[in-house]
Amino acid sequence: MTYRHRVATVFLFGFFLDLINMFIASIAFPAISRALAVSVSQLAWVSNAYILGLTVVVPFSAWLSERWGAKRLFLLSLGLLSLGALAAGLANSLSELIFWRTLQGMGGGLLIPLGQALTWPLFQPHERAKLSAAVMLVGLLAPACSPAIGGLLVEAFSWRWVFFASLPVALLTFVLAVRWLNDTPRPVRPTRFLPLSLLADPLLRFAMLIYLCVPGMFIGVNVVGMFYLQRVTGLAPGAIGALMVPWSLASFAAITFTGRYFNRFGPRPLVVIGCLLQAMGIMLLLKIDADSPLALLILAFTLMGGGGSLCSSTAQSSAFLHTPAEEMPDASALWNLNRQLSFFAGNALLALLALLLRVFPPAYAWQGVFISAAVITLLPLLFCLRLNNRAIIHRLHTTLEKS
Image 1 (cartoon, rainbow, N blue to C red):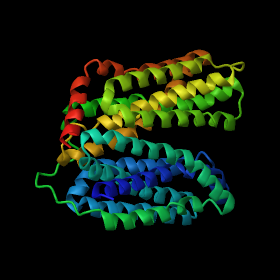
Image 2: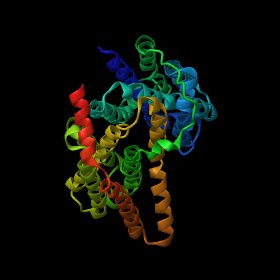
Image 3: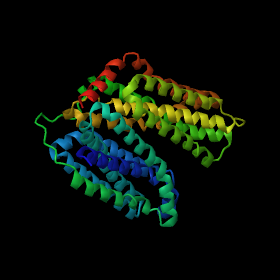
Image 4: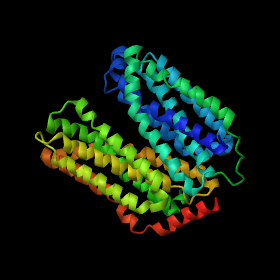
């Protein structure tokens, strides 16, 4: 295995660890609620604490990397993540659990920008679409398998094993990082803290906008949609949750397609098609009622899965095409901070729904939320008009010919 593929493997393991720890805890909430004698609503802080720790530390990743070195900081972040997981599993109160989950999130928050900054410069621009596809597939796999793994652990052992489960993977990742990662030279340029001048790159700016408007809106629609679909269809929560199966299959197909054809078509047509598909899927939700066939629900989630993942994988492939290697730590920190902001779209749409319900009848309030989400999903199309797609394809082909 070449050095760059070793680095990519370590990064993917770190990415998987971060996502598993983000999503696996929620399945154990009922058991934790009984064991610690707290309400399920209070346990929301167990998830929020991880995201809070992650979000707080991301802006400092490049700054810390320049002072301590990327390899040393990556190993330290793995240690923090593991310590937080172990201590969270041993917690005897909600406050202890929240504290250790915050520390765990701080460790996980450094893994992705550091791994990305180490990995991306090792691959030529024309190779990054396949690398991005691998990243997106891990991003699809980890949230999908987390509830199943967590549920089995809770049933077979206890809720504490939900936190212990990641420790063997963390240990393996630590060993691989020690053996495979080279020490990176310290930069000679003055240290900067999250330089916003990087946003002068229109492609990075465009990719960040896509992430906010498309995956961000789906997160919000998915949160609001669970309430809406239970209300208008009367389906059980489990049946509605099963709609993520066609969403996942469509996402897998879209990510695979982007990895294979990004260099041929460039980002513009993929983003246009993806935005339109997701917007159509969101608008289909307005047609759902108690008499709607299941096929209509499946179609809506298939369109959202295929369209959203077509856009997110294209954004991931495009984001750093113009970014020099020495700027990657800062660019990666900006990218991951933006990715975290997209996770709050669900709360934003819930707030909009609550506001509309005070003013309008429920039917109009739901319509307002879904129409707003569909319109925001289409915003990147305005920027597609200014995107020099031909120049991007030419750059990809030029680097391919030189390699």
